[in-house]
Image 1 (tube, helix red, strand yellow):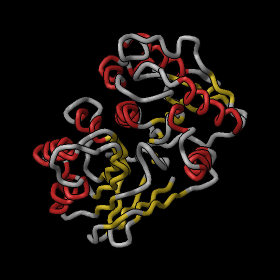
Image 2 (tube, helix red, strand yellow):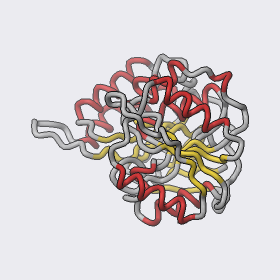
Image 3 (tube, rainbow, N blue to C red):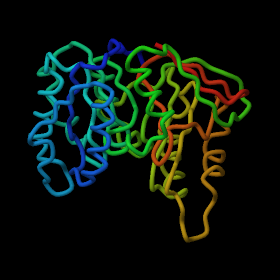
Length: 299
């Protein structure tokens, strides 16, 4: 994977466009909390009147959501796009989006979970790195440290971030950082938005996936040969993974499926659902140190 072009730093008082490219918006109170955090910071948020026009489990038809994305990206006054929520649906846009309709100027695209498909799509088709970071419906539940880290990165107040977790004692490596929701990334394999995973440090998280389903996904990655291409793996939070039937612990699944790869791995890093969700820029250079249990990335 090639290094992506990271957008310029942004400043309060500038315009940030809101889109709902995935699931229908139902958590309106949490959405308003996220909007308030951005506005209290000083940003002007552009919220389209048709932000969420529920169509089944989606926030609108594919055509409506595509047009919302195109309009937000091509808005000359906006410096960033923040997604309202995840859920499911952004993959459908990647199947239909006409990339020629999108201007080439880079701006931050912010979101995680289902937004993985957009982040990978823009990196692959436009060479532009977005930010794997809280959506509006999760931002209000983030600890203050995580909220501050998000704005510090976007506003250029920090040029590097170091995250600490549990190292697996297999040295260090440098590569291009590619964050993702594991389920989305697994379904992206073999599509037009899947980048070449050579030279990649893959950062993964997920929610609501039982250990056996994570096992199945990682086995698919192994069998497809994609895990063997990676320079390193950074594992974030896999929350809401409790099961009532006999099971391996999640940590045991990771070690069983990954420890024989011979690459640096760090687990229990502070990103993902239901807790601190550190901002992870797509396509920047990163260093993973599995002896000291750190992931460090910079502009």
